[in-house]
Image (tube, rainbow, N blue to C red; front, side):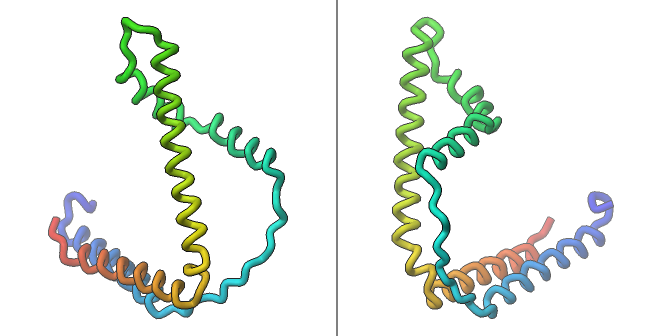
Length: 142
């Protein structure tokens, strides 16, 4: 129905835009919740590692990613094991480095984001983004 009726498409587009603007205004004017840090019961490091390792082993997206990307970089005339080992080592090193950067950045930002001022800025940025998306959607032509 939406592909054949320009009016139905326009109405749905405007409803979606209005909803995005509503969400943006709601975020913009919402009060910042009081963030109290509750002490979580710490898990043993070995248990955390085992959970993460099991999760990655059962993740089909990772298998499909490696099946799609790695064969493009393997030379059929050379040793597969050496090339695969190099690719896995390179990929793993990059992933560890990126996750260390994420963890350090989160640690640095945690105090600021927990404050009322930080929460207000995050709410305003998120709300402003939703409002801009809503206005962009409303003003977009097919």
